[in-house]
Image 1: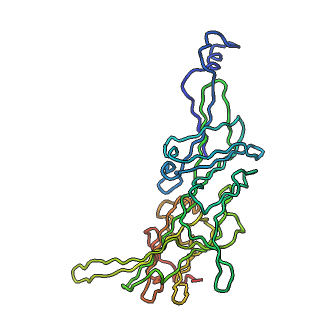
Image 2: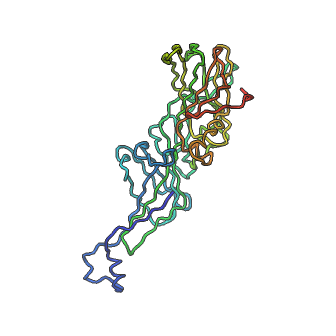
Image 3: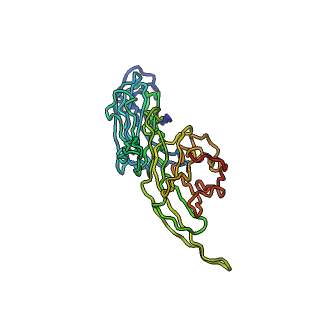
Length: 349
């Protein structure tokens, strides 16, 4: 969160009187406007892997709440539409001088699976967001919660102890800039054969175990929420051929691609990525999901683990499958195009 102050060039009544040393207004200044301090709010989303402001192109709606120093809500606004695409977009802040906390969610209007606890909060804690889960039952009749929705971008911003001030002696604009973090992630899991054996999308099931269905007003994952699964919103199959060159023959590569969406990923998450061979319900892949994603973070730019997870919003994992539809782990995994060779004793449970 940043506080940006900029003085608008010009001369106003109070500054003119101060400059002249007069204690009161004089007729010579009757045509000068009164001094004004304007307050406004701007938005930015450069907490990404491009380190560039993507707010105008990605965020299509914002909801912002202001709370006074006693924690009581004093102001709320919702903005959406083409106006947000302007790189100089801002909104006026009709607040009196004082100290405020701001909480903002971006993209809520476009994210039907996410539900705000209260649109008229009595306190900041009422601004948590829940992912609506679907229900089912396992074979042993125990409950199974899951999400198989395709998410739009969900963004969060927060600024605490912001001082709104008034300068009676100058024309001034005070800008409070909210910096967003993107919470939703797009995950691709690709299974590719190594010997031309045909693979079909019904041969496998995919899921990611999780417990991050609720985000607090401060964008923390709320502890104690039920465990559930992220399941694919789309699974496709395909075949490609590598052309013959010299004495080499044409090779057919068969693949299955699963596409999933997740909420915010935390560095201490115990979630697992699981791929099941449907013919016998065997888990052919079961790895610590976040732990593996973090194996390649140093290839992009050294940064703390949580920062990497928050900046990166797309993850692609490629596994190689043998003729028996097992994971051929000796080849390793490609994560966001980076090659990783896991330890061969990785537990599959």
